[in-house]
Length: 88
Image 1 (tube, rainbow, N blue to C red):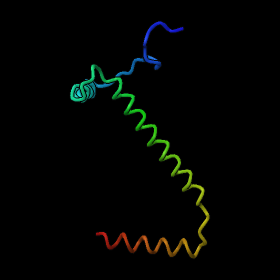
Image 2 (cartoon, rainbow, N blue to C red):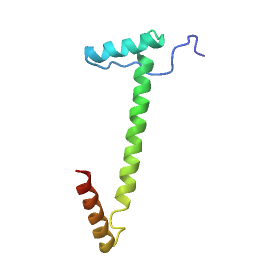
Image 3 (tube, helix red, strand yellow):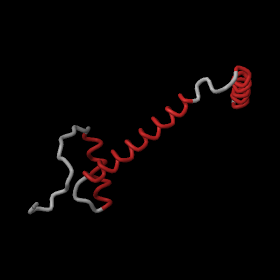
Image 4 (cartoon, helix red, strand yellow):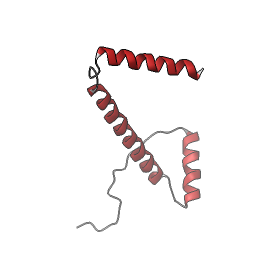
């Protein structure tokens, strides 16, 4: 049985530039937090979620390779080229 109320996370050392540390402390102070561990956890959750989302999209895109006929691919390429010319 655990006799103390420590967080269940693992303590580790991460080196960050002074500039980022200062920004984290500033945000933590605005939120009324003692330190910035919660902010680092929040940032990691957001980053890892975005990484997972991008990997999922890339996997879906790779699955589409070869799914267009040659004619469809040429029509799409022509349409994209036309659209790009009109952006300028």
